[in-house]
Image 1 (cartoon, rainbow, N blue to C red):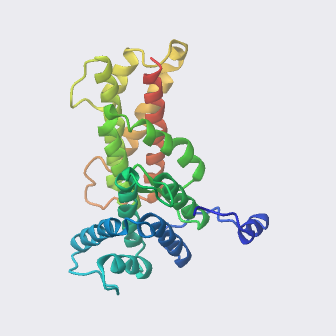
Image 2: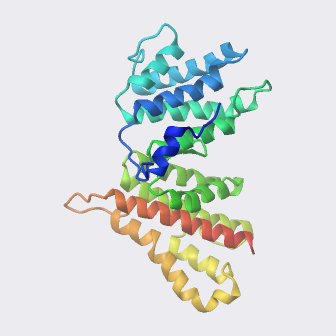
Length: 300
C-alpha cells in the first residue's frame, strides 16, 4: 500500500515535530507494526502464500540456530507466527534488526524474482522500510543486503549510498565486502574491528585500481606505497599535479594513520578504548575517499 502523507504527519511537520535526530537502542512498537504491514504485503496476501510462508519458516530456523534456541521464545502455532510475534515482543533492538535484515534479504533476493504480481514491488518494500526508519528517528537503513547504521542523513546519502553503489561492480567485490563488514562492526559497536576493515577496504580499492590498469604492486603493499603507485601513474588529473603533495599527504595521514594509532598495533600494558565517534569518522572518511578514488579511475 505504500506511504501516505496523512493529516497528523503533515501537522507534526508544520509544528517542527518531525524526527531529525537518530537513536539506535529503542525500536518502538509503532515502527514494528509498520514493518509487519510491509511483511504482510510481501508474504501474506497473495495466492502464493504457502511458498512465502516457507521462506519465513527458513528465517525462523536460521535465528534459532544462531541464537542457540530450540524454539524462539514467542507464542504461535506455526514457525512464521512465532517469528513475527518474536519480532514484536523482543526487548533487544539487535534482534529486531536481525529479523528485518533476514526478511528483507529474502524480499530483495528471492521474492523480487517471482513472476506473479505482488501487492508491492521489492523496491517499494525496501523504500518504505527505509522511510519508516527515518520517520521514527531510528538510525538505520537497508542497503546492499545489510542493515547499516547512519549518523547523518546528508553524509549517508552523499557518501555512503554512492560508494555502496559504485563498489557493487564485480571488480571491487573485495573492497565492497570489507566496507560492509566495517558497517556491521560499527552497528555492533565493535569499533576497533570497524576501523581495521575501513583500512582493508581502502587498500583493496587501491589494489583493484592498480590491477585494472596493470600497475605493478606487491600484494602486501601498504596504503602509503599504493597511494604512491597510483599517484606516479597519474590517477590524479594534470591540473591537480601542483596539489599532489597535499592530496597524497591527506590520503596517507587519513585512514591509515588513524587506524594505526587506534587499532593497528599492540596496546601495551593498558587497554585502548576506541570511542564510537572515531569509528564513525573513519567510516565516513573511507566512504568519501573510496568514492573519490573510484570516480577518478572511471574518468581515466
